[in-house]
Image 1 (cartoon, rainbow, N blue to C red):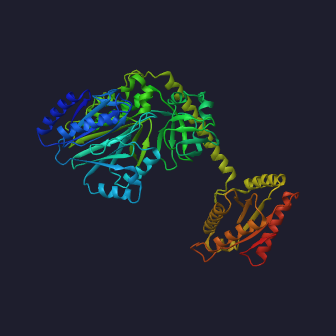
Image 2 (cartoon, one colour):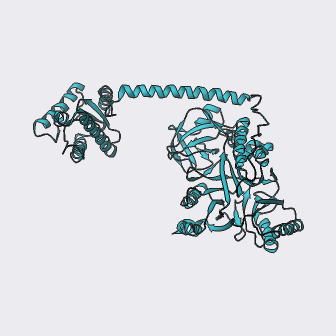
Image 3 (spheres, rainbow, N blue to C red):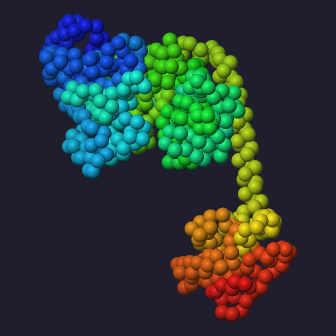
Length: 595
Protein backbone atom coordinates (compact mmCIF):
# COMPACT_ATOMS: atom_id res chain seq x y z
CA UNK A 1 0.00 0.00 0.00
CA UNK A 2 1.34 3.40 -1.02
CA UNK A 3 0.13 6.98 -1.02
CA UNK A 4 0.56 10.03 -3.24
CA UNK A 5 -0.66 13.56 -2.50
CA UNK A 6 -1.01 16.89 -4.23
CA UNK A 7 -2.78 20.23 -3.89
CA UNK A 8 -4.62 22.07 -6.63
CA UNK A 9 -2.78 25.11 -7.95
CA UNK A 10 -3.69 25.19 -11.65
CA UNK A 11 -4.84 22.88 -14.42
CA UNK A 12 -1.42 22.41 -15.98
CA UNK A 13 0.32 21.38 -12.75
CA UNK A 14 -2.49 19.00 -11.79
CA UNK A 15 -2.45 17.45 -15.28
CA UNK A 16 1.28 16.78 -15.00
CA UNK A 17 0.82 15.28 -11.53
CA UNK A 18 -1.96 12.98 -12.71
CA UNK A 19 0.17 11.79 -15.63
CA UNK A 20 3.00 10.97 -13.25
CA UNK A 21 0.54 9.06 -11.03
CA UNK A 22 -0.70 7.20 -14.10
CA UNK A 23 2.82 6.01 -14.77
CA UNK A 24 3.23 4.78 -11.20
CA UNK A 25 -0.06 2.85 -11.39
CA UNK A 26 1.05 1.25 -14.65
CA UNK A 27 4.27 -0.14 -13.15
CA UNK A 28 2.50 -3.20 -11.75
CA UNK A 29 -1.09 -4.38 -11.29
CA UNK A 30 -2.71 -2.39 -8.46
CA UNK A 31 -5.83 -0.47 -7.57
CA UNK A 32 -6.26 3.13 -6.55
CA UNK A 33 -8.75 5.21 -4.62
CA UNK A 34 -8.57 8.99 -4.39
CA UNK A 35 -9.91 11.27 -1.70
CA UNK A 36 -10.66 14.87 -2.64
CA UNK A 37 -11.17 17.30 0.21
CA UNK A 38 -12.20 20.84 -0.74
CA UNK A 39 -12.10 23.71 1.72
CA UNK A 40 -15.73 24.70 2.33
CA UNK A 41 -15.07 28.48 2.12
CA UNK A 42 -12.34 28.43 -0.52
CA UNK A 43 -11.68 31.08 -3.15
CA UNK A 44 -13.79 29.20 -5.68
CA UNK A 45 -17.00 27.20 -5.32
CA UNK A 46 -17.01 23.49 -4.61
CA UNK A 47 -18.67 22.94 -7.98
CA UNK A 48 -15.87 24.83 -9.79
CA UNK A 49 -13.12 22.73 -8.24
CA UNK A 50 -15.08 19.52 -8.62
CA UNK A 51 -15.68 19.93 -12.38
CA UNK A 52 -12.00 20.60 -13.07
CA UNK A 53 -10.86 17.64 -10.98
CA UNK A 54 -13.46 15.23 -12.37
CA UNK A 55 -12.54 16.14 -15.96
CA UNK A 56 -8.87 15.49 -15.26
CA UNK A 57 -9.62 12.15 -13.59
CA UNK A 58 -11.74 11.09 -16.60
CA UNK A 59 -8.95 12.08 -18.98
CA UNK A 60 -5.82 10.92 -17.13
CA UNK A 61 -6.96 8.43 -14.45
CA UNK A 62 -10.27 6.96 -15.69
CA UNK A 63 -9.83 3.75 -13.68
CA UNK A 64 -9.42 5.53 -10.36
CA UNK A 65 -12.63 6.31 -8.44
CA UNK A 66 -12.70 9.23 -6.01
CA UNK A 67 -14.82 10.43 -3.11
CA UNK A 68 -14.74 13.61 -1.09
CA UNK A 69 -16.53 16.37 0.74
CA UNK A 70 -16.24 19.98 1.84
CA UNK A 71 -14.03 20.34 4.90
CA UNK A 72 -12.48 22.89 7.26
CA UNK A 73 -8.87 21.80 6.91
CA UNK A 74 -7.24 19.12 4.78
CA UNK A 75 -4.36 16.82 5.76
CA UNK A 76 -1.39 17.21 3.44
CA UNK A 77 1.86 15.38 4.18
CA UNK A 78 1.27 15.25 7.91
CA UNK A 79 -0.04 18.81 8.34
CA UNK A 80 -3.49 20.38 8.46
CA UNK A 81 -3.34 22.81 5.55
CA UNK A 82 -5.52 25.75 4.59
CA UNK A 83 -5.06 25.02 0.86
CA UNK A 84 -8.30 24.97 -1.06
CA UNK A 85 -8.01 21.41 -2.39
CA UNK A 86 -5.98 18.35 -1.35
CA UNK A 87 -6.07 15.19 -3.46
CA UNK A 88 -4.75 11.94 -2.01
CA UNK A 89 -4.26 8.76 -4.05
CA UNK A 90 -4.12 5.51 -2.07
CA UNK A 91 -2.59 2.62 -4.01
CA UNK A 92 -3.47 -0.95 -2.98
CA UNK A 93 -0.91 -3.53 -4.11
CA UNK A 94 -2.51 -6.78 -2.94
CA UNK A 95 -4.48 -8.39 -5.79
CA UNK A 96 -7.27 -9.45 -3.41
CA UNK A 97 -8.03 -5.88 -2.29
CA UNK A 98 -11.15 -4.36 -3.82
CA UNK A 99 -12.53 -0.83 -3.52
CA UNK A 100 -16.24 -0.29 -4.20
CA UNK A 101 -17.60 3.27 -4.42
CA UNK A 102 -21.34 3.98 -4.20
CA UNK A 103 -23.37 7.15 -4.14
CA UNK A 104 -26.91 7.32 -2.87
CA UNK A 105 -29.50 10.04 -2.50
CA UNK A 106 -30.39 10.36 1.16
CA UNK A 107 -34.03 10.88 0.23
CA UNK A 108 -34.05 7.59 -1.67
CA UNK A 109 -32.46 5.74 1.25
CA UNK A 110 -35.23 6.72 3.68
CA UNK A 111 -38.12 6.23 1.25
CA UNK A 112 -39.83 2.88 0.91
CA UNK A 113 -37.40 -0.03 0.92
CA UNK A 114 -34.35 2.19 0.39
CA UNK A 115 -32.41 0.95 3.41
CA UNK A 116 -33.05 -2.66 2.51
CA UNK A 117 -31.92 -2.09 -1.09
CA UNK A 118 -28.65 -0.53 0.12
CA UNK A 119 -28.01 -3.47 2.44
CA UNK A 120 -28.76 -5.96 -0.33
CA UNK A 121 -26.39 -4.23 -2.74
CA UNK A 122 -23.51 -3.98 -0.28
CA UNK A 123 -24.03 -7.48 1.14
CA UNK A 124 -23.02 -8.97 -2.22
CA UNK A 125 -19.41 -7.97 -1.53
CA UNK A 126 -17.20 -10.60 0.08
CA UNK A 127 -14.45 -10.12 2.68
CA UNK A 128 -15.67 -6.65 3.66
CA UNK A 129 -13.34 -5.07 6.20
CA UNK A 130 -14.59 -1.49 6.39
CA UNK A 131 -17.28 0.95 5.25
CA UNK A 132 -16.49 4.65 4.86
CA UNK A 133 -19.34 7.17 4.82
CA UNK A 134 -19.04 10.79 3.66
CA UNK A 135 -22.15 12.95 3.69
CA UNK A 136 -23.56 16.39 4.44
CA UNK A 137 -26.68 15.20 6.24
CA UNK A 138 -27.89 16.56 9.57
CA UNK A 139 -27.50 14.52 12.73
CA UNK A 140 -31.13 13.35 12.73
CA UNK A 141 -30.71 12.28 9.10
CA UNK A 142 -27.45 10.53 9.97
CA UNK A 143 -29.35 8.26 12.36
CA UNK A 144 -31.10 6.81 9.30
CA UNK A 145 -27.76 6.09 7.63
CA UNK A 146 -26.39 4.57 10.84
CA UNK A 147 -29.39 2.26 11.01
CA UNK A 148 -28.66 1.19 7.43
CA UNK A 149 -25.00 0.25 7.93
CA UNK A 150 -25.54 -1.27 11.37
CA UNK A 151 -27.35 -4.09 9.62
CA UNK A 152 -23.96 -5.54 8.64
CA UNK A 153 -21.68 -7.81 10.64
CA UNK A 154 -20.29 -6.20 13.81
CA UNK A 155 -16.80 -7.21 12.63
CA UNK A 156 -16.96 -4.60 9.87
CA UNK A 157 -15.48 -1.21 10.77
CA UNK A 158 -17.63 1.83 9.98
CA UNK A 159 -16.13 5.33 9.89
CA UNK A 160 -16.24 8.63 8.01
CA UNK A 161 -17.11 12.28 8.35
CA UNK A 162 -19.82 14.89 7.95
CA UNK A 163 -19.12 17.69 5.46
CA UNK A 164 -18.55 21.25 6.69
CA UNK A 165 -20.56 24.30 5.66
CA UNK A 166 -22.02 27.51 7.02
CA UNK A 167 -24.78 30.00 6.23
CA UNK A 168 -22.94 31.14 3.09
CA UNK A 169 -21.55 27.78 1.94
CA UNK A 170 -23.63 24.61 1.57
CA UNK A 171 -21.92 21.47 2.91
CA UNK A 172 -21.49 18.83 0.20
CA UNK A 173 -20.16 15.36 -0.49
CA UNK A 174 -19.49 13.78 -3.88
CA UNK A 175 -18.00 10.88 -5.87
CA UNK A 176 -16.49 10.54 -9.33
CA UNK A 177 -20.03 9.88 -10.60
CA UNK A 178 -22.14 12.35 -8.61
CA UNK A 179 -21.28 16.01 -8.17
CA UNK A 180 -21.36 18.06 -4.96
CA UNK A 181 -24.70 17.79 -3.16
CA UNK A 182 -26.02 18.15 0.38
CA UNK A 183 -28.28 15.16 -0.35
CA UNK A 184 -25.48 12.84 -1.45
CA UNK A 185 -24.30 9.92 0.67
CA UNK A 186 -20.93 8.62 -0.55
CA UNK A 187 -20.04 5.11 0.60
CA UNK A 188 -16.74 3.31 0.10
CA UNK A 189 -16.58 -0.42 0.84
CA UNK A 190 -13.09 -1.80 1.50
CA UNK A 191 -12.74 -5.56 0.98
CA UNK A 192 -9.98 -8.08 0.61
CA UNK A 193 -8.71 -11.27 2.15
CA UNK A 194 -5.40 -9.65 3.12
CA UNK A 195 -6.70 -6.20 3.99
CA UNK A 196 -6.60 -5.28 7.68
CA UNK A 197 -8.16 -2.26 9.37
CA UNK A 198 -8.06 -0.91 12.91
CA UNK A 199 -10.30 1.98 13.94
CA UNK A 200 -9.95 4.00 17.13
CA UNK A 201 -11.19 7.24 18.66
CA UNK A 202 -9.32 9.83 20.69
CA UNK A 203 -11.17 12.43 22.75
CA UNK A 204 -8.90 13.80 25.47
CA UNK A 205 -11.48 16.00 27.17
CA UNK A 206 -11.71 15.09 30.85
CA UNK A 207 -15.02 14.86 32.77
CA UNK A 208 -15.37 17.18 35.71
CA UNK A 209 -18.05 17.72 38.33
CA UNK A 210 -21.20 15.80 39.16
CA UNK A 211 -23.43 13.93 36.67
CA UNK A 212 -26.37 15.98 35.40
CA UNK A 213 -29.69 14.49 34.26
CA UNK A 214 -31.17 15.57 30.90
CA UNK A 215 -34.78 16.12 31.93
CA UNK A 216 -35.97 17.82 28.74
CA UNK A 217 -34.50 17.86 25.23
CA UNK A 218 -35.69 17.82 21.64
CA UNK A 219 -33.31 16.81 18.85
CA UNK A 220 -30.20 18.99 19.32
CA UNK A 221 -31.75 21.44 21.82
CA UNK A 222 -31.21 21.03 25.55
CA UNK A 223 -34.03 22.71 27.43
CA UNK A 224 -33.66 21.45 31.00
CA UNK A 225 -30.91 19.82 33.04
CA UNK A 226 -32.06 18.54 36.43
CA UNK A 227 -35.33 20.43 35.72
CA UNK A 228 -33.53 23.79 35.48
CA UNK A 229 -32.79 25.85 32.31
CA UNK A 230 -29.82 24.21 30.60
CA UNK A 231 -27.79 27.41 30.26
CA UNK A 232 -27.70 27.79 34.06
CA UNK A 233 -24.97 25.13 34.16
CA UNK A 234 -22.55 27.29 32.18
CA UNK A 235 -23.59 30.44 33.99
CA UNK A 236 -23.47 28.99 37.50
CA UNK A 237 -20.23 27.00 37.34
CA UNK A 238 -18.18 28.89 34.73
CA UNK A 239 -19.73 32.39 34.68
CA UNK A 240 -20.00 32.18 30.88
CA UNK A 241 -22.39 34.93 29.70
CA UNK A 242 -25.22 34.34 27.26
CA UNK A 243 -23.82 36.49 24.47
CA UNK A 244 -22.39 36.27 20.95
CA UNK A 245 -19.14 34.75 22.24
CA UNK A 246 -20.90 31.86 23.97
CA UNK A 247 -19.73 29.26 21.41
CA UNK A 248 -16.04 30.10 21.78
CA UNK A 249 -16.23 30.39 25.58
CA UNK A 250 -18.07 27.08 25.92
CA UNK A 251 -15.93 25.17 23.40
CA UNK A 252 -13.36 24.25 26.04
CA UNK A 253 -16.13 22.78 28.21
CA UNK A 254 -18.22 20.31 26.20
CA UNK A 255 -20.54 17.74 27.72
CA UNK A 256 -19.59 14.10 28.06
CA UNK A 257 -22.88 12.36 27.22
CA UNK A 258 -23.80 8.89 28.41
CA UNK A 259 -26.98 7.84 26.65
CA UNK A 260 -29.60 5.48 28.13
CA UNK A 261 -28.20 2.64 25.98
CA UNK A 262 -24.73 3.08 27.50
CA UNK A 263 -22.86 4.82 24.67
CA UNK A 264 -20.56 7.70 25.62
CA UNK A 265 -19.42 10.60 23.43
CA UNK A 266 -18.87 14.36 23.48
CA UNK A 267 -21.26 17.11 22.47
CA UNK A 268 -20.35 20.78 22.45
CA UNK A 269 -22.65 23.78 22.71
CA UNK A 270 -23.18 25.85 19.57
CA UNK A 271 -25.38 28.64 20.88
CA UNK A 272 -27.87 29.55 23.59
CA UNK A 273 -31.32 31.13 23.50
CA UNK A 274 -32.72 34.00 25.55
CA UNK A 275 -34.94 31.46 27.33
CA UNK A 276 -31.92 29.49 28.58
CA UNK A 277 -31.93 26.58 26.13
CA UNK A 278 -28.67 25.36 24.57
CA UNK A 279 -28.36 24.36 20.92
CA UNK A 280 -25.92 21.45 20.85
CA UNK A 281 -23.69 20.15 18.07
CA UNK A 282 -25.91 17.07 17.71
CA UNK A 283 -28.83 15.22 19.26
CA UNK A 284 -28.72 14.60 23.04
CA UNK A 285 -31.45 12.13 24.10
CA UNK A 286 -33.64 12.77 27.12
CA UNK A 287 -32.68 10.76 30.20
CA UNK A 288 -29.01 10.87 29.22
CA UNK A 289 -26.49 11.69 31.91
CA UNK A 290 -24.07 14.56 31.29
CA UNK A 291 -20.82 15.54 32.87
CA UNK A 292 -19.12 18.77 31.97
CA UNK A 293 -15.63 18.22 30.64
CA UNK A 294 -12.66 20.48 30.06
CA UNK A 295 -10.12 20.73 27.28
CA UNK A 296 -6.62 21.00 28.65
CA UNK A 297 -3.93 20.87 25.92
CA UNK A 298 -1.69 18.66 28.04
CA UNK A 299 -4.41 16.10 28.73
CA UNK A 300 -5.47 16.05 25.08
CA UNK A 301 -1.89 15.61 23.88
CA UNK A 302 -1.39 12.79 26.36
CA UNK A 303 -4.42 10.94 24.96
CA UNK A 304 -3.21 11.54 21.42
CA UNK A 305 0.16 10.00 22.22
CA UNK A 306 -1.52 6.94 23.76
CA UNK A 307 -3.68 6.60 20.66
CA UNK A 308 -0.65 6.90 18.37
CA UNK A 309 1.23 4.26 20.38
CA UNK A 310 -1.69 1.86 19.93
CA UNK A 311 -1.84 2.54 16.17
CA UNK A 312 1.93 2.08 15.80
CA UNK A 313 1.70 -1.47 17.16
CA UNK A 314 -0.71 -2.26 14.31
CA UNK A 315 2.08 -1.35 11.82
CA UNK A 316 -0.19 0.51 9.34
CA UNK A 317 0.80 1.33 5.79
CA UNK A 318 -1.68 4.19 5.64
CA UNK A 319 -3.63 6.18 8.22
CA UNK A 320 -6.96 7.90 7.60
CA UNK A 321 -8.03 10.66 9.98
CA UNK A 322 -11.36 12.42 10.47
CA UNK A 323 -10.72 15.21 12.91
CA UNK A 324 -13.32 17.54 14.40
CA UNK A 325 -13.60 21.17 13.32
CA UNK A 326 -14.08 21.98 17.01
CA UNK A 327 -10.66 20.50 17.82
CA UNK A 328 -9.08 22.64 15.09
CA UNK A 329 -10.69 25.75 16.58
CA UNK A 330 -9.52 24.68 20.04
CA UNK A 331 -5.89 24.36 18.95
CA UNK A 332 -5.92 27.44 16.71
CA UNK A 333 -2.51 27.89 15.05
CA UNK A 334 -1.30 24.66 16.66
CA UNK A 335 -3.89 22.41 14.99
CA UNK A 336 -1.14 20.02 13.87
CA UNK A 337 -0.91 18.87 17.50
CA UNK A 338 -3.78 16.51 16.78
CA UNK A 339 -1.98 14.58 14.02
CA UNK A 340 1.77 15.10 14.37
CA UNK A 341 2.33 11.88 16.33
CA UNK A 342 0.38 9.92 13.72
CA UNK A 343 2.39 11.52 10.91
CA UNK A 344 5.51 9.86 12.33
CA UNK A 345 3.95 6.44 11.82
CA UNK A 346 2.80 6.40 8.20
CA UNK A 347 1.23 8.14 5.22
CA UNK A 348 -1.94 10.00 6.09
CA UNK A 349 -5.16 11.12 4.43
CA UNK A 350 -8.03 13.01 6.02
CA UNK A 351 -9.74 16.23 6.89
CA UNK A 352 -11.41 18.31 9.59
CA UNK A 353 -15.11 17.44 9.57
CA UNK A 354 -18.26 18.70 11.25
CA UNK A 355 -18.84 15.30 12.86
CA UNK A 356 -16.81 12.10 13.03
CA UNK A 357 -18.48 8.78 12.20
CA UNK A 358 -17.42 5.69 14.14
CA UNK A 359 -18.90 2.31 14.91
CA UNK A 360 -18.48 1.94 18.65
CA UNK A 361 -19.55 -1.12 20.65
CA UNK A 362 -21.57 -2.35 17.69
CA UNK A 363 -23.43 0.94 17.08
CA UNK A 364 -22.53 3.62 14.56
CA UNK A 365 -22.59 7.05 16.19
CA UNK A 366 -21.73 10.59 15.22
CA UNK A 367 -19.00 12.01 17.44
CA UNK A 368 -18.03 15.58 18.21
CA UNK A 369 -14.64 16.90 19.31
CA UNK A 370 -13.13 13.53 18.50
CA UNK A 371 -10.23 12.38 16.37
CA UNK A 372 -11.22 9.19 14.55
CA UNK A 373 -8.23 7.24 13.25
CA UNK A 374 -8.37 4.39 10.73
CA UNK A 375 -5.22 2.32 10.24
CA UNK A 376 -4.93 0.24 7.05
CA UNK A 377 -2.50 -2.49 6.12
CA UNK A 378 -2.27 -5.14 3.41
CA UNK A 379 -0.87 -8.44 4.61
CA UNK A 380 0.96 -9.11 7.83
CA UNK A 381 3.30 -6.56 9.46
CA UNK A 382 6.59 -6.35 7.58
CA UNK A 383 8.63 -5.82 10.74
CA UNK A 384 8.43 -6.24 14.47
CA UNK A 385 6.52 -3.49 16.28
CA UNK A 386 8.97 -0.82 17.39
CA UNK A 387 9.26 0.54 20.91
CA UNK A 388 6.87 3.24 22.04
CA UNK A 389 9.17 6.23 21.80
CA UNK A 390 6.39 8.77 21.32
CA UNK A 391 6.03 11.31 24.11
CA UNK A 392 4.17 14.55 24.65
CA UNK A 393 6.51 17.31 23.68
CA UNK A 394 4.47 20.31 24.78
CA UNK A 395 3.10 20.47 28.33
CA UNK A 396 2.82 17.11 30.00
CA UNK A 397 6.14 15.27 30.05
CA UNK A 398 6.06 11.69 31.30
CA UNK A 399 9.74 11.78 32.04
CA UNK A 400 9.83 14.94 34.15
CA UNK A 401 6.36 14.59 35.64
CA UNK A 402 5.53 18.24 34.90
CA UNK A 403 1.81 18.89 34.82
CA UNK A 404 0.09 22.17 33.95
CA UNK A 405 -1.76 24.20 36.57
CA UNK A 406 -5.05 23.53 34.75
CA UNK A 407 -4.46 19.78 34.97
CA UNK A 408 -3.64 19.96 38.67
CA UNK A 409 -6.73 22.04 39.45
CA UNK A 410 -8.92 19.72 37.40
CA UNK A 411 -7.40 16.70 39.13
CA UNK A 412 -8.10 18.31 42.51
CA UNK A 413 -11.72 19.07 41.60
CA UNK A 414 -12.28 15.60 40.13
CA UNK A 415 -10.83 13.90 43.19
CA UNK A 416 -13.09 15.93 45.47
CA UNK A 417 -16.06 15.17 43.23
CA UNK A 418 -15.37 11.44 43.24
CA UNK A 419 -15.01 11.44 47.02
CA UNK A 420 -18.29 13.32 47.43
CA UNK A 421 -20.04 10.98 44.98
CA UNK A 422 -18.68 7.98 46.88
CA UNK A 423 -19.90 9.44 50.17
CA UNK A 424 -23.29 10.14 48.60
CA UNK A 425 -23.50 6.55 47.32
CA UNK A 426 -22.76 5.23 50.81
CA UNK A 427 -25.42 7.56 52.21
CA UNK A 428 -27.90 6.27 49.64
CA UNK A 429 -27.09 2.70 50.67
CA UNK A 430 -27.76 3.55 54.32
CA UNK A 431 -30.98 5.28 53.34
CA UNK A 432 -32.14 2.21 51.42
CA UNK A 433 -31.36 -0.04 54.38
CA UNK A 434 -33.36 2.25 56.66
CA UNK A 435 -36.40 2.51 54.38
CA UNK A 436 -36.58 -0.70 52.32
CA UNK A 437 -37.66 -4.18 53.43
CA UNK A 438 -34.74 -6.60 52.98
CA UNK A 439 -36.84 -9.47 51.63
CA UNK A 440 -39.37 -7.87 49.28
CA UNK A 441 -37.34 -4.75 48.33
CA UNK A 442 -40.37 -2.52 48.83
CA UNK A 443 -40.71 0.13 51.55
CA UNK A 444 -40.75 -1.09 55.14
CA UNK A 445 -43.40 -0.12 57.69
CA UNK A 446 -41.44 2.77 59.13
CA UNK A 447 -41.09 4.46 55.74
CA UNK A 448 -44.72 3.71 54.80
CA UNK A 449 -45.91 5.31 58.03
CA UNK A 450 -43.84 8.44 57.31
CA UNK A 451 -45.16 8.68 53.77
CA UNK A 452 -48.73 7.97 54.89
CA UNK A 453 -48.58 10.81 57.40
CA UNK A 454 -47.25 13.19 54.76
CA UNK A 455 -49.89 12.11 52.21
CA UNK A 456 -52.69 12.77 54.69
CA UNK A 457 -51.24 16.20 55.56
CA UNK A 458 -51.18 17.20 51.88
CA UNK A 459 -54.66 15.79 51.29
CA UNK A 460 -56.14 17.66 54.25
CA UNK A 461 -54.78 20.98 52.89
CA UNK A 462 -55.99 20.52 49.29
CA UNK A 463 -59.44 21.04 47.84
CA UNK A 464 -59.30 18.36 45.14
CA UNK A 465 -59.69 14.61 45.34
CA UNK A 466 -58.43 13.15 48.59
CA UNK A 467 -56.29 10.07 49.02
CA UNK A 468 -56.95 6.37 49.55
CA UNK A 469 -55.12 3.37 50.94
CA UNK A 470 -55.21 -0.37 50.26
CA UNK A 471 -54.30 -3.00 52.84
CA UNK A 472 -53.74 -6.53 51.59
CA UNK A 473 -53.09 -9.83 53.35
CA UNK A 474 -52.02 -13.17 51.86
CA UNK A 475 -54.70 -15.75 52.59
CA UNK A 476 -53.70 -18.83 54.61
CA UNK A 477 -50.06 -17.80 54.64
CA UNK A 478 -49.28 -19.96 57.71
CA UNK A 479 -50.39 -23.02 55.76
CA UNK A 480 -47.99 -22.10 52.94
CA UNK A 481 -45.12 -21.90 55.43
CA UNK A 482 -46.10 -25.13 57.16
CA UNK A 483 -46.70 -27.09 53.95
CA UNK A 484 -43.98 -25.81 51.64
CA UNK A 485 -41.35 -24.33 54.06
CA UNK A 486 -40.59 -20.82 55.18
CA UNK A 487 -38.24 -20.44 52.24
CA UNK A 488 -41.15 -20.95 49.86
CA UNK A 489 -43.16 -18.49 51.95
CA UNK A 490 -40.44 -15.90 51.34
CA UNK A 491 -40.71 -16.57 47.60
CA UNK A 492 -44.46 -15.95 47.75
CA UNK A 493 -43.96 -12.66 49.65
CA UNK A 494 -41.42 -11.45 47.08
CA UNK A 495 -43.60 -12.42 44.12
CA UNK A 496 -46.67 -10.70 45.57
CA UNK A 497 -44.62 -7.52 46.13
CA UNK A 498 -43.46 -7.59 42.49
CA UNK A 499 -47.03 -8.11 41.26
CA UNK A 500 -48.21 -5.10 43.28
CA UNK A 501 -45.41 -2.92 41.89
CA UNK A 502 -46.16 -4.02 38.32
CA UNK A 503 -49.86 -3.20 38.66
CA UNK A 504 -49.05 0.18 40.20
CA UNK A 505 -46.66 0.98 37.36
CA UNK A 506 -49.52 0.47 34.90
CA UNK A 507 -52.31 2.02 36.97
CA UNK A 508 -50.84 4.82 39.13
CA UNK A 509 -47.11 5.46 38.91
CA UNK A 510 -47.13 7.77 41.96
CA UNK A 511 -48.65 5.06 44.15
CA UNK A 512 -46.40 3.62 46.89
CA UNK A 513 -46.19 -0.06 47.86
CA UNK A 514 -44.89 -1.19 51.26
CA UNK A 515 -44.75 -4.16 53.59
CA UNK A 516 -46.88 -3.44 56.67
CA UNK A 517 -45.75 -6.52 58.57
CA UNK A 518 -45.59 -10.31 58.14
CA UNK A 519 -47.81 -11.12 55.17
CA UNK A 520 -49.59 -7.73 55.16
CA UNK A 521 -49.05 -4.99 52.58
CA UNK A 522 -50.04 -1.33 52.45
CA UNK A 523 -50.49 0.71 49.27
CA UNK A 524 -50.72 4.52 49.37
CA UNK A 525 -52.74 6.20 46.61
CA UNK A 526 -52.46 10.02 46.57
CA UNK A 527 -55.20 11.97 44.77
CA UNK A 528 -57.23 8.78 44.29
CA UNK A 529 -60.95 8.22 44.93
CA UNK A 530 -62.39 5.21 46.75
CA UNK A 531 -63.82 3.81 43.50
CA UNK A 532 -60.48 4.09 41.69
CA UNK A 533 -58.62 2.54 44.62
CA UNK A 534 -61.05 -0.37 44.74
CA UNK A 535 -60.54 -0.96 41.01
CA UNK A 536 -56.75 -1.11 41.51
CA UNK A 537 -57.16 -3.55 44.39
CA UNK A 538 -59.34 -5.80 42.23
CA UNK A 539 -56.66 -5.85 39.52
CA UNK A 540 -54.00 -6.84 42.04
CA UNK A 541 -56.30 -9.49 43.46
CA UNK A 542 -56.87 -10.93 39.99
CA UNK A 543 -53.17 -10.78 39.04
CA UNK A 544 -52.13 -12.72 42.16
CA UNK A 545 -54.95 -15.23 41.69
CA UNK A 546 -53.71 -16.11 38.18
CA UNK A 547 -49.98 -16.03 38.90
CA UNK A 548 -48.13 -19.35 38.56
CA UNK A 549 -46.34 -19.98 41.86
CA UNK A 550 -45.21 -23.41 40.61
CA UNK A 551 -45.04 -25.34 43.93
CA UNK A 552 -48.68 -24.89 44.91
CA UNK A 553 -51.96 -24.49 43.09
CA UNK A 554 -52.96 -20.93 43.92
CA UNK A 555 -52.24 -17.95 46.16
CA UNK A 556 -54.94 -15.39 46.93
CA UNK A 557 -55.15 -12.07 48.74
CA UNK A 558 -57.84 -10.31 50.72
CA UNK A 559 -58.06 -6.52 50.59
CA UNK A 560 -59.47 -3.64 52.56
CA UNK A 561 -59.80 -0.25 50.84
CA UNK A 562 -60.83 3.14 52.20
CA UNK A 563 -60.65 6.84 51.37
CA UNK A 564 -59.46 9.58 53.72
CA UNK A 565 -62.21 11.70 55.29
CA UNK A 566 -61.21 15.28 55.84
CA UNK A 567 -60.66 16.11 59.47
CA UNK A 568 -60.32 12.56 60.80
CA UNK A 569 -57.29 11.37 62.73
CA UNK A 570 -54.68 9.17 61.06
CA UNK A 571 -55.50 6.29 63.43
CA UNK A 572 -59.16 6.43 62.36
CA UNK A 573 -58.08 6.24 58.72
CA UNK A 574 -55.87 3.17 59.24
CA UNK A 575 -58.32 1.45 61.61
CA UNK A 576 -61.06 1.63 58.97
CA UNK A 577 -58.91 0.00 56.27
CA UNK A 578 -57.93 -2.70 58.79
CA UNK A 579 -61.61 -3.35 59.55
CA UNK A 580 -62.37 -3.66 55.85
CA UNK A 581 -59.54 -6.15 55.43
CA UNK A 582 -60.85 -8.16 58.41
CA UNK A 583 -64.30 -8.19 56.79
CA UNK A 584 -62.84 -9.64 53.57
CA UNK A 585 -61.01 -12.34 55.50
CA UNK A 586 -64.15 -13.28 57.47
CA UNK A 587 -66.43 -13.37 54.44
CA UNK A 588 -64.65 -15.81 52.13
CA UNK A 589 -61.21 -14.27 51.45
CA UNK A 590 -59.86 -13.55 47.91
CA UNK A 591 -61.97 -10.39 47.67
CA UNK A 592 -61.97 -6.61 48.08
CA UNK A 593 -63.95 -4.66 50.68
CA UNK A 594 -64.11 -0.89 50.01
CA UNK A 595 -65.94 1.39 52.47
